[in-house]
Length: 460
Ligand code: BG6
Image 1 (spheres, helix red, strand yellow):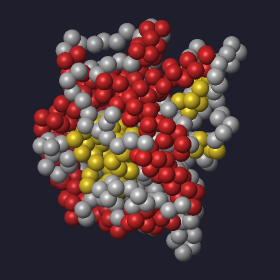
Image 2 (tube, rainbow, N blue to C red):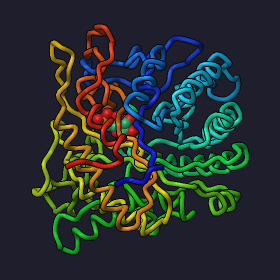
Image 3 (cartoon, rainbow, N blue to C red):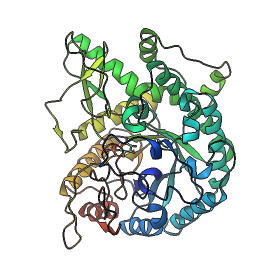
């Protein structure tokens, strides 16, 4: 049994669901401008039309029994020029969204920024430019002032680790190595400023980071492979959480930065900020596990376009992803590893001793809408069920998991694969090219999850 106050919910992001990209004063974000590797992938112009249909979506989620919904706020709608003028139309819209959630007794968990940096800031260097940190601080202060009476639980920056490591896939451009780690440092400083501002401005407010964490396995017990895994754990996982929770740059990450010639620009006043502002909880996104080995001579491959999930990770002289022979893969080549979630949660608990919300977890799959508007997604039920069982085991072993908000509440435009890779508990009737009716249809997984929430347990 899960505790009666367990926060059952689901997750979304703004740019993947809202559409309305040219409405109510929104400016373009890097998601609106990024070149698509595949022209068959839907853009965000309409997405799932959630901007217009949020009431219907919230109502359906309430009928499912959801007690929480994670959404993100789009910086480009709230402050279209990135830095100054607050768009009152947007403020009014999101106040209505939160009011609607309140009417349905759904608690919002709000991500301040989910991959959608204003293009005007990107044009000035984006996260490599320290001025973006100031712009972000100004933006989150606006959020806390405008919505702090409606939203108590905040998440800072969605998956900065994956955004930087999978830059080409997510943002449409490559950082140089030096730029990537200056952006890392600036993002981490921005996050600390958000912790500080939330605690100053939101009465009783709580805030946490939201990285994508999955423990990296070594491909063998060969010492070089163990070291490759330790390095990649630092680069992919602990570097981000250590900064947030321990207020330091992880020592293995530092060694890696030294070896690769990175020279970080750090301001003298940062130390005070970094060591005095901490999260109240951790938001953790988990989909898959990663297995690496030390790349042997002759195994070199280009640092290519990677989504950083499963086996396509590679960095010359450090680590190389490989197929884990013990795990199955989904239709999109991501390994499925529920036990990996338990291990990851227990290690996070061991390192950080913070309450945890699972803020993303889910299965991207090809779904089929039957003529009578059903979606028989038993594969998604199996995925969610096995991961929930794992969470339950971790809780028995002392991990303080406070809530589960799977990805995603409704179908949305997948970052890497467009509309064909569906995650939702609720089907959205459109395809990549054809907007169709945009009607909503609950999937079998919706009804299964409804039962889980109602009974507070995962029935096998
Ligand atoms: C996470 C992101 O990295 O993974 C989501 O926070 C994203 O925005 C999800 O949709 C799944 O990735 P993808 O590429 O399958 O959409």
